Amino acid sequence: MSTSSDYIYLSPPDVGDVERKLLLAAFDSNWVAPVGPDLEAFERQVAGYLDIGYAVALSSGTAALHLALLVAGVDPGDTVLVPSFTFAASANAVVYLGAQPVFLDCSADTWNLDPCLVADELDRCARLGTLPAAVVAVDMYGQCADYEQLLAACDRYGVPLIEDAAEAHGASYRGKPAGGFGLAGVLSFNGNKIITTGGGGMFVTNDGQLADRVRHLATQAREPVPHYEHRVIGYNYRLSNLLAAVGRGQMTTLDDKVRARRGTAAVYRAALGHLPGIDFMPVAGYGVPNHWLTCVLVDPAAFGASRGDIREHLAAQGIDARPTWKPMHLQPVFQDRPMRGGAVCEDLFRRGLCLPSGSGLTDSQRQRIIAEIRSVAREGY
Ligand SMILES: Cc1ncc(COP(=O)(O)O)c(C=O)c1O
Image 1 (cartoon, rainbow, N blue to C red):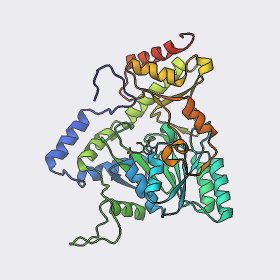
Image 2: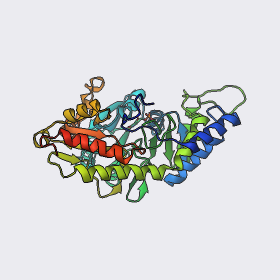
Image 3: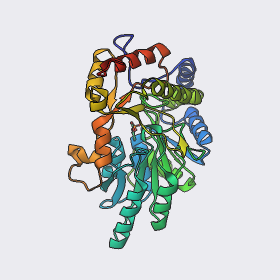
Image 4: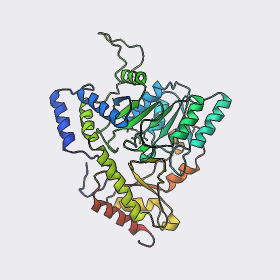
């Protein structure tokens, strides 16, 4: 995918011989369809890894979020609490259902949905008799949200929580794998994620009935009779068996890929963590992130260059770094939606930079990135 061999992408796919063989074997088997043995094997593999009852492979993480919210009972006109600091898909899925996202700020010490804000908002809604139909928690950049606190707040009012673990496959919270919290979890296998199928996602849950409903809805909601019978509106959201074969291969090296990203985070931190004006995304004591992307906050006065200066310099050197997510409440498409708080995520957006973090990053590439970042600083560290 590169135009120049020394270009460094933010988080490129990392696939190899195992995936290639499995893909060709699936092709040769003629299960070239959104059904087949690789699909089932991939689901079993992911469910086993997450130690969860059921997994349904879908065409994207966004599709998984859409169906997760649908089976959670989100109806047109409902509200759903969503962190403002996330990728747009977390909120888009709410709008697909005709529901209204209510955006909440995140905590500065985790960059994840602020559990106190969630509790306050649920208390407020309960007093008004307008409880949201669901809460979406996102495991930001591969670090889990604080599920003990979030679930305590949600359980008080019986509001279902959906875990958007698109970025967090391989991370854990209090020893339990990301994706397994709340009513259902969602994974993404987009090309930039920790493992990829070249586009894909998964719905995971311990509720067999929910998994059956998602499988049904994802395959056009066709009734199990010989002719084509439909009682509800369905979707064509199933993952291809060919792509599931790639996913099977990726799962065999998931732990290696997580280890590589954690290693990269440690190298960046050791080389840049002591520089004035550079702060790394905090690691919460309650879990172990997968470090999908390593992110820093830049204080321009102390560092001598802004987040934008660093990004532009890296881009000129053929290195892809990105601003942290632009909060949803600042997006033109969501500007009229309600927002609670906002100062924290606005600051993260103003100062945050995601550094190249792919699991295939070599040590010499890491050293090149570090040297270029240092060279932008006022002191030229
Ligand atoms: C937090 C978050 N949620 C949802 C998604 C959507 O996943 P997909 O691209 O597989 O639809 C992504 C990334 O793409 C994401 O980062």
